[in-house]
Length: 117
Picture 1 (cartoon, one colour):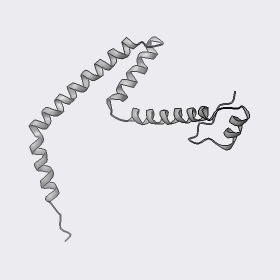
Picture 2 (tube, helix red, strand yellow; picture 1 turned 60 degrees about the vertical axis):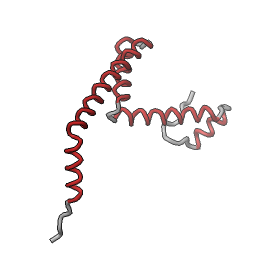
Picture 3 (cartoon, one colour; picture 1 turned 135 degrees about the vertical axis):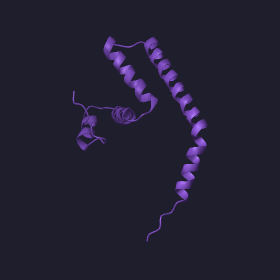
Picture 4 (cartoon, helix red, strand yellow; picture 1 turned 180 degrees about the vertical axis):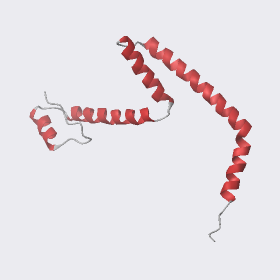
């Protein structure tokens, strides 16, 4: 069976193939949705979002045990949540301790206008 192209749009040949094989439009849409999902996942994995770490951990656990169960996924999510809460606590303490200093530095920097001559 021929697979649809992996480009972001379906080319004319793909439309002809779908029509010849009486595919429903939902099949073509599903392929496009999968491509969009893959693109979004790739963007996520390049980010520093906590979900990227979780997905990476899930994939590693899946590879190590040739599968993954809900208990493992739940444990990984709990560990990610714990780390997130620790990081959030540190960020809040830093804001409480250094917040006024940072705000004062930012306002003094924005008030500084260099002269051109």
